[in-house]
Image 1 (cartoon, rainbow, N blue to C red):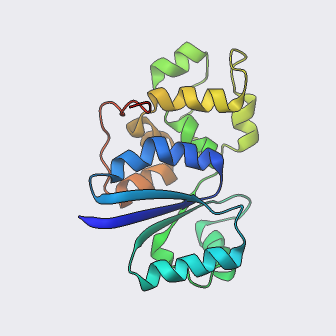
Image 2 (cartoon, rainbow, N blue to C red):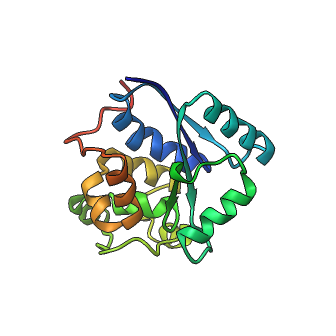
Length: 184
């Protein structure tokens, strides 16, 4: 078993998602899985951190939304420009934004319970699209995100979002029948 994995994510919605969905899937491979939201840290500090991870031969995954870029390649070029110490093989691009991964993982029974449409693909879903779909029963988008994570299905997400499927397949993750209770 390897010592530590760092997953660098953009912000708090990503921390919530990766902490609940992805981190448990890596714990059998690593002694420690750490999440680091980098968007609020100065680029030079992130770049120095990436350099130290490389020097220590510590595994990491750098996650970024594609945002307005035309392609994964274009987004990676921007990241190479911002972070000279980043390794391309460690970059994962979320298409379109992390909200598209949240929605993609809603199983059919949850979609029905919330009165939400089944989308064959969430690849084009933006934060604004996601927010427009939040059922009125929820006080906030964060409440809705937490509710999604309670029933999140990686296999559904892989069917409905190609970048999620890429991530899942690339790291050879397996879909557990039930995620562990976050309170335990």
